[in-house]
Image 1: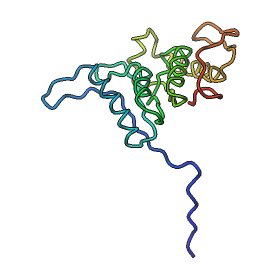
Image 2: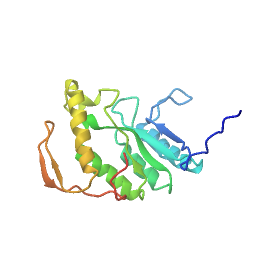
Image 3: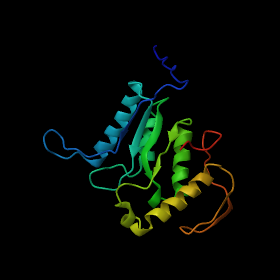
Image 4: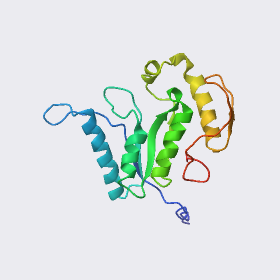
Length: 187
């Protein structure tokens, strides 16, 4: 007796690619400029849409061998050259970033891209951003938990009432811009 194979789900499999904007040597052994690597990232994002790839992700790093310290900026450049591809972070290092400012950057990208922004929030697998931004790596867990909690409230896009140990409390402040979608930025 043969087993019936279930039908494909209503939402088909999607294909995405990601980059960390890594610096690799040119064929002649020279190192490209950081600006050249970033321009190539934008070209790759536009090419991904032409190849009918569904999503393009760009990771955040603060190191010599990766030049993408502000993925939202490069993704906004890609948004200007594309129409349908989802624009994602391969990770937004929420542990050492201010969640309010990060949310504003992503909401801005969401508006520019007509609702195609989709950040992936993380702790960061490298810890170079901790001393760079004045944080103690011993606070790794506490920072991420508090900032993720605040991000979750920001997604509601109403007045924020939040209290934690990593920043001053918020009492009824609103955050702008708001995202393109009615339920906040997809994360």
